Image (cartoon, rainbow, N blue to C red; front, side, top):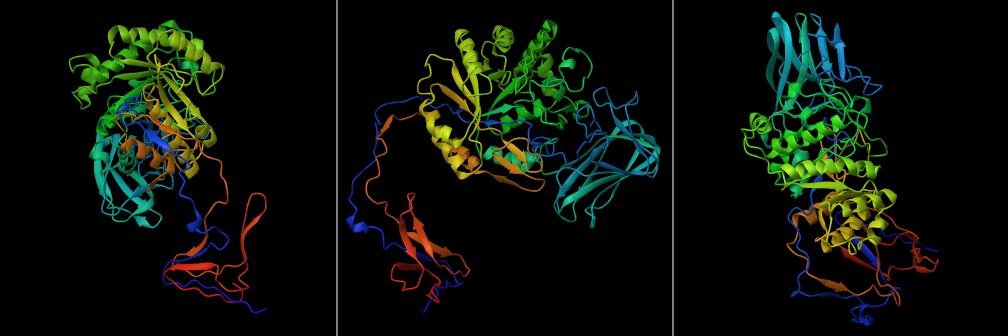
Length: 612
């Protein structure tokens, strides 16, 4: 039997469509089998401008090596085996010659305790994050270091990779007590594998070795990585929830009662993250790595303002969450945390004549940040213990700042004993807003579009602070979009909602899925990001009531066609077969005959040859 061959030409797109076994469009009946009825004269719930926002947590190395634009890893030599078994003060550093980490009375300050003592003629080199330090040809990079050295000491600073130098070498004259020194590089080549090297001509102490791209987000000092910040800004979020998440409540419980001095591994506390960068701590992160606090509360507030988002900070409740079940029973410590929370509100909103308002002004922002919402705790698994402490925070805030909404939560899941108990406690106490979190499969989101239809309209209101459908595939994004229509339909109950987590470094992932992915030189959006952007950029003012008919049962054959196509290439096809779920063959062609069942459209050319 002779066989013919169809070949698709190289010139352009070709599409072959077979429809011989399918009903002709002429026989299709013009019957509306699904209807949506809209009542434009009626008014549904109003949708607040802050409905959709973003939740930022330092997970997946989202801060250091991510949103925070610092290019040097472990810049202050504070990495420690106390935090991670694989860490030392020289993690991410390599030494040629003699260099020793020192923690003694000659330190830079009480929170920046470890420094590097470098012998004459020695070189220390930093590897940055991911594959190395990213520099782009023609771009400027700002170097700084704190040093203590004898007069006449020269620090030679170089940017290089395996292929050679990446910028002109700089020399810095250092002398005397601890002092900050600076220099600027202009990259002569582009590289993703750069290294920063410092060589000293005489014995010297080094600390806070730093390299920032000049082109940070909005050109701000101690700033943010531009591409990541701009992706967040492009969402037009109504609020920014920060700094977490699980890292808020966690830390070494043994250190909780230490009221003075810097204690490693204590819970995330906002006062550790403000003021001069060199005086901020480095602390262990719940997710297994260290965080420098260079990206601190001031930077979070500033970023929220820059992107037009309402700031929504979260403070620890002294009850652990995220799989842990411990509560701190220390009344003096609880009182201090409550006062810290009041001080936080003063830092955000107080006049520059107040203690913490003055600190904000000193950092560069004399005007208030207009804080209106504040959350206490995150995903506590001990709802009764948490709520007893939450009430102390709420009472203190409402007494001094009655216009601040204090947000509670309902634990880590969408249902169950913790969820039910927490909601009952919040409801009985007349709490203004409750934070819900859940991560479920896409089918759950499709089946729970009506979740909030039955919620009490008399409160509390809902803040859906963390949710995702456990995947970054298109089906996940589509399921989330369907679910979000239910959030909008219940906008009188669900007042805030944010997908989580926001960022993921592809080389350090503790949680999937994530909205935006990145490495040291690129970033890319997930399908979920595009859905969030679609909703955030097109938020309506009010829901218009509508009704939809049920999806009808399918009667008769489903019409359609099978297409074969290429783009600017050639291909051969044979034995094309389509079967139904019950095994019935709907279309079959081995190309042993002619091509009468196929229609050619588009460009290119095709022929039947040798039965293909």
